[in-house]
Amino acid sequence: MGLLDVLQQVVGGNAEKHFDEVAQNASPDQLGAGLAAAMRSDQTPPFSQMVGHLFGQSSASQQAGVLNQILATLGPAALSAAAGGALGRVLAPGQTQLTPDQASQLSPAQVTEIAAHAEQAHPGVVDQVSQFYAQHAGLIKVLGGAALAVTLAKMKEHATQG
Image (cartoon, rainbow, N blue to C red; front, side, top):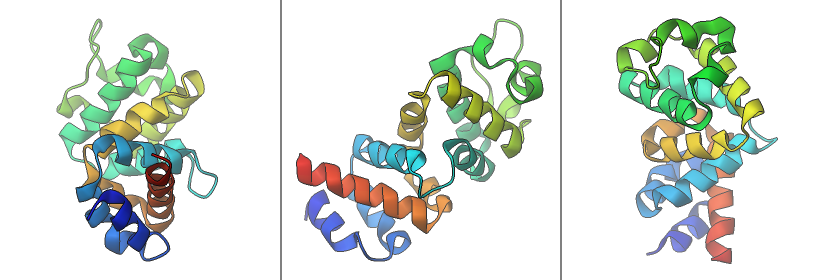
């Protein structure tokens, strides 16, 4: 059974119940595109809130990974003042990547502010962050039913077009 077959069965049903099956059959690119659509949807919380929530549920290495994805997209200088300078306080001068220990010093609220600043400065960061989280599909489930339903619906839409 292919991804489209799985999505045909799932969309309209309980998204949380079937998400694992879809994630196992989808490529990270397909999952990332669906998640990006959910992060941009007016049916879900804003991107920055979703990132903050995911950050709060992530391991220290995942926290560093998502922040490093944002840093790679915008650069440390563009983000140094975000969240009251929180990122600038944990990054050493000249440092362009956070360690898991450094990332774990930031709160989900600070990361929400960093993500909001990043999205405003570079809207494409939504796609980059979504691709990062597509590599950690189990974590996406913490976003809840609405975000999962939008993700799956967008994946189905792309699968039927392709």
